[in-house]
Image 1 (cartoon, rainbow, N blue to C red):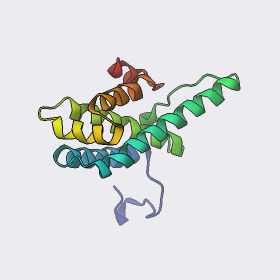
Image 2: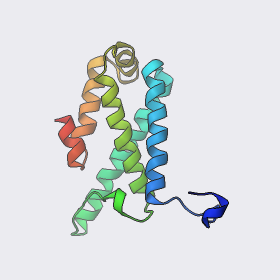
Image 3: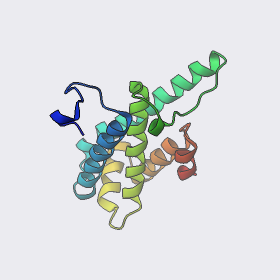
Image 4: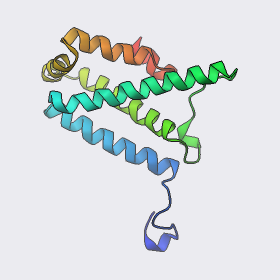
Length: 146
């Protein structure tokens, strides 16, 4: 509750639960729009964001491993507000799973054609999605890709 009577300052950072809710709503709205009008120009930044987040995940993991530490995915549901990396991880995971959901629906041809236009061909699009899943450090996402 962020009303004036709640006592929460208007500019207070979002809690972890609020942040997850905002991410889920925005990704859900985007997925709904893509289901009906999957335009190539709209897909490019969507795919770029997922790719960028996966690259950052790998760079972060490599850095941790080089320092002798262990890389682990943070449980974002039970933490205090964290880093931008954690927030982008949650968003990219939701976006990737949303894309997989859409590809599993009936009448997927317009989306597959648009993805093929961005990535070269429909086969390249499917390969990109599976590659994005398998190359994640998150076992849940990797398992879905396998």
